[in-house]
Image 1 (tube, helix red, strand yellow):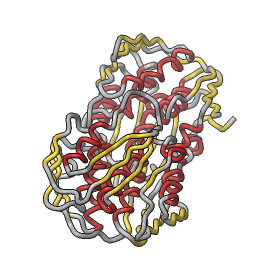
Image 2: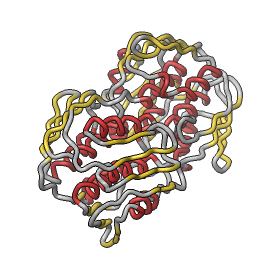
Image 3: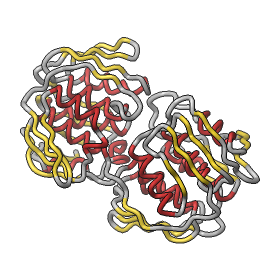
Length: 413
């Protein structure tokens, strides 16, 4: 449980970790090359630990040393991802692509993880079928087989990050050319492609809506540094937006958050790039505005809980439209307990900002919602107790300690 009291203005410097949403996929991609791959700038979080346990179950040796993770991949990988590990986090599904690409078979439990909306993996399977894979589902497992993956043009119905990642990792060892149209464009996709290219893959166009992959015979293990976590950076942006103050976020990439920074600018937050991050200053109270979540480069659905938290204490009325995952609005019930004035209408919420929230016991329903509730507590009179804080630990390395270093009145209860 995390205890938060009204705080601010914040001041100081905080450094963001490597991106959770990239590190997990790079760990899975290591399966493509026998030998020892080493990842640097890896966040020390529960999800990384669990992904390491999953790889160890497959026969790998995984060693965590601070922000460095080394992965020794055997020639004979066990191509199975069991239920008790996959149920913990949805990202586990990305082992499907590299297992099929390298071994031609995989047995992966139907994924679990955060429950904030219906997120079918049909696009993953349909895309891999275009490359020649066949699937059967029984007893809660997806079983996949292929003699030889063959390059093809795959058109995604939606720019799904997970489907793009699975297709990318499967196609690098396929025969011929694969073209992924309507691909996800997130920075984490570009980071994965960069990692694969370092291993010897031939991937072009990552970060655009069309990715082209020329299959190669083999890949080699490498050393690689994980890109900075833009969602963690957004968390600190929201914290200073709610509490006021002036901070520096080291490691943050402005070019990965263009649309979000534009919206925050409209709210009154001043942001300027530095040599190694962002300088941020916010007034004591923000201005309301309307925001819609969209696939990258739009405002990410992962940012939405933080935007709602900021608007709950901003001046005026704002509307947030969630176009990706409807279940993300589960944060609202907890903010209402804290005195927020929020009304939900389908996939829109209307937020009338209040002068201050009121501290209350709340529950973290998922990683980002939990962090948003912690941040909201900075603007709440009295004491806010955020329960189920283990969700937050899945995605953040010492969020409590880093906010405390900026002057927040926060601690584990």
